[in-house]
Image (tube, rainbow, N blue to C red; front, side, top):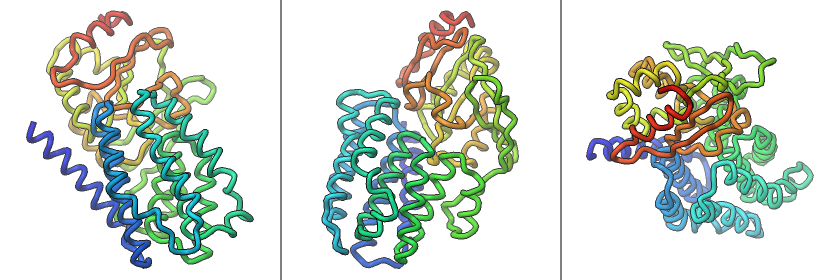
Length: 360
C-alpha cells in the first residue's frame, strides 16, 4: 500500500512540476500568481481523473483544490468586467454536479459542451475578441481547452487557435498557452501541428511526437486505435473488430488500479490465457499519458500492450472512460461492463462476464 501511495504521489509531483514549469513566463506578478494557481489545479485534476477509481471523493478533492487554489484568479487587472470569469468559475463547478448525479463520461461531456455553446461560443469571433480584455481572452482559451479535455472533440481546437492568435497580437501569449495548444493538438490527433508547435516554441513538457501511419480500413464501420512501435517512434492506426467475442479495457500505464488489475489477471492462468488473445487495452485520447509511459508498459506487458483510442467519437459504445473499465462484447454489442478495480480484485466477476460472451 505504501509503495502504491508513493508512486501515486510521485506521479502527482511530476505533473505539478511540469505544469508549474509551464507557468514561468514574463507576466505581471498578479498574472503569474493566477497562472500558478491554474497549473496546480490542472495538475491535481489530471492526477485525480486518471489515477483513482470513480467515486464522489475524487470530485470532492477536485472541488477542494479549486476552492483553495483558484479564488484569487477571479480578480482582473486589465479592465475585465468579471462576467466571463464568473461564468468560467461556474463552468468548473460542473464537476461537483456530475459527481452528485453520477453522470457517465458521455453525459458529462454533453453538459460541458452545452454550457460552452451557451456562454463562450458566442464570443469566439475575431470582431468580438478584439473588444475583450486580455484576461477574458485568456479565459476563453482555457474554457475551450477544458471543454476539449472532457469531450475530445477537435472542433474546440479552432476556438483555442483563434484566442491564441488574439493573445499573440497583444503580446500576451506565453509558453503556458503554447504548451496547452500543443497538448490540444496531441489530444485531437493533429500530430503534424503538434510537432510544428514544439519546434517553434520548444519546452520540456512537449514530448517527442511519433510518426503517424494510418493503416486502418476506412470502408469498415469499426472503431480504431493506434499502436506504438517498440522503439516509440511510430504510431500505427488499425481497426478493432468487436463482432467476435472480445474485451475492451479502458486503462492507462500510470493508473495504479490498472497495474493492480493486470497483475491479478496475469497471475490467474484462465484469465491470462483469454485476455492475452481476446482483450484490447485502450488509453483514452488524453495527454496525461505520455508516449514514453505507453512504451514502458508495452515492454513490461508485451501480451497486453496499450493501444491509444484514435478519437472518442469512434467509440460511442463506451459511455464511461474511468480507469479501469472493462467492456465485454459479443456480435458487436456490449454485453456487460465492470468499472474500477477494488482492493479484493474482481477476478470472479471477470470470469462471469467472459462466460456471458462465450469466452469461457
